[in-house]
Image (cartoon, rainbow, N blue to C red):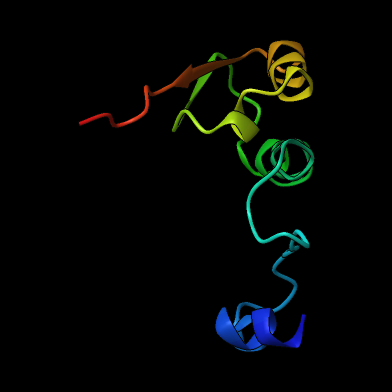
Length: 84
């Protein structure tokens, strides 16, 4: 864990900035849902409809995140993956 803290320089980031990590080092559904519910929804303001454009990573397409977005009247748009 110390290596990841130093690699991303979390200690010198904005005071009270939220951060987390995943043991395996890649994004997972639960972190996407946590970010959406605890960070995004708390900082977007009350006006609706709103659109959130995301890349097509599977952690952004979890049922929990989609359900919370529908409850909050947020339209989700997932961009397709870049395929050569």
